[in-house]
Length: 229
Image (cartoon, rainbow, N blue to C red; front, side, top):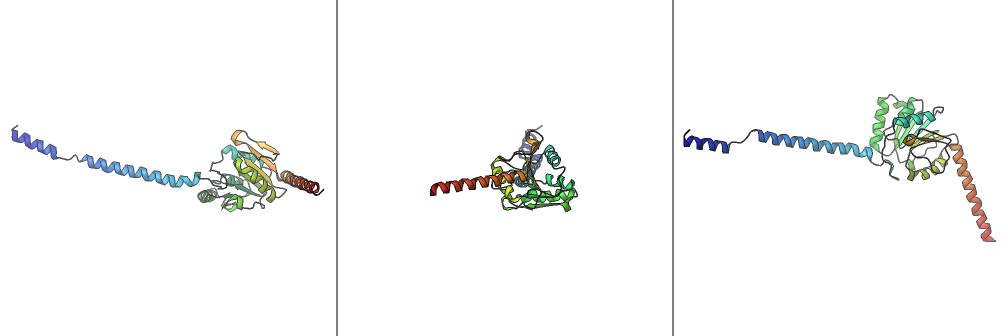
């Protein structure tokens, strides 16, 4: 090969562009964009599901286990009428209760979970016997319900004791999941570990509330008499 041909071939090699490089670059950008967009979309969808649902205390959405749902239904087996799940999450307790014949409602502050619950109820064919409300539990009144289910956290249970004792009828039952109420004495428990549920008879804790109020009134009266004398 002549020197001129060598120089010509060298020039063509130096100035040529690999057609695969732009393709790979564009592919990399596309993949990066798709992955990034997917992460943003996942974050947007997932955040409302794990954000605190009840703002007065931090109560994140943690789905009930299959065992928890079964234990709730077991302790309410002989019951009927209306049922409410306070902080109903994705609606699985409400839907399961509706399938057992309850007229079941859920109260949940997170609108994404409420809409998801309504969809699930429709898909399971129990939308006529269920209802889901976007509401703060502290602003709702539960007097109309004969069965109450609550998945709470310790920081809220003492306040909820007083609220339910003031609102519920004497024939209502309260089922606490994951954490018991601090001063109420359960009439029975079911399950073990995180799947434990505690059942409370309203007539008992309302009686205790009345007794406590009476004792407080007597103590105040005695203090006033002592101060006057």
